[in-house]
Image (cartoon, rainbow, N blue to C red; front, side, top):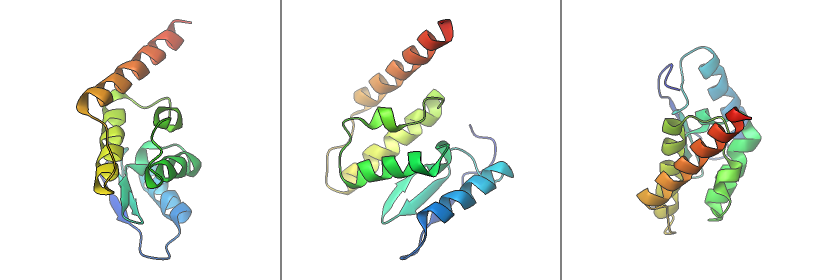
Length: 126
């Protein structure tokens, strides 16, 4: 959610991705950063503020870096609201295109969001 400010952190060469993620989460706890806040690591910018754990963030980062996006939805936090999910899927697509790979079409992104909304709705009805 947008409850603070969007903070964009850029790691310098040799930086520690885990420490940077931890710092971003601390800024979120203070209300300074929001789910749209990003980390740029090795030229790949992702909204790291949307992830609950460093492991989640780093798995998605690895999928983008290796251009293995086939199971990307299974790597994203299940509790993301549609707006945050749209932001992260567009970021993943943009970073893939920057690397000369295929990104997602707007229709593919819409379909993934609709599927996630259906999954959440179904699980809430149980």
